[in-house]
Amino acid sequence: MPFRLFPAALALIAATLCAALPAAAQRRGEAGSFDYYVLSLSWSPTWCTLQGDASDSSQCDGTHAWVLHGLWPQFERGWPQDCHSSFAAPSRAQTAAMADIMGTSGLAWYQWNKHGACAGLSARAYYDLARRAYESIEKPSAFARLQRPVEIPASLVEEAFMQQNPGLLRDQITITCQSGHIQEVRICLTKDLEPRRCGADVIRDCTLDDARMNPVR
Image 1 (cartoon, one colour):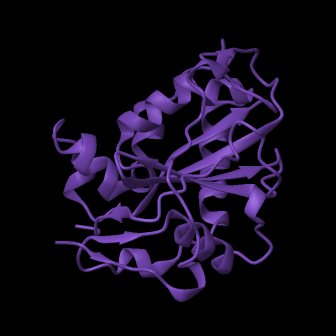
Image 2 (cartoon, rainbow, N blue to C red):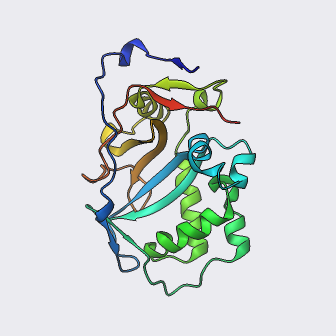
């Protein structure tokens, strides 16, 4: 059974719902035409529990903690996707080189086609930028040291990232949940990879006070 972790500083946070991005907000866009990026960091144990194990993903055979789900071009409201790109699709070597931070080369390929092409960059430049964005954010080490499942306020994850990244403000980061689990940390960045305020459709946090986090395997 998971134990419940309620730090005193956060115990009074009232929470009942997990907010999600509106499904209808995405639309086909023109490559290079967008306002900012969303850096999405996925808690790999959650994805493996809810999806990856069933598909026998190789991502779930390793020791992944926070993996790069994607670097997504974003409008102030909504986002472009499936853009036509004048650049060649990424090679197998390029997608394989991203597996260390994305879990699998398949995810790197999928993210390029759905989101990366909208950045208006070559595949190599986009993957380089995504890696720089991923490495620019310090990940709290405490979560990777979990020995058993815990139930925590989603706000605690947000607080931990802000403490680990001085200058990162509450309106520049959001936490998402799925099926009662901590799902992702999403950080809004300028095109120069500086933190900035999230758009109204991104800024809504998961407000569960008992979100589950499974340990790294």
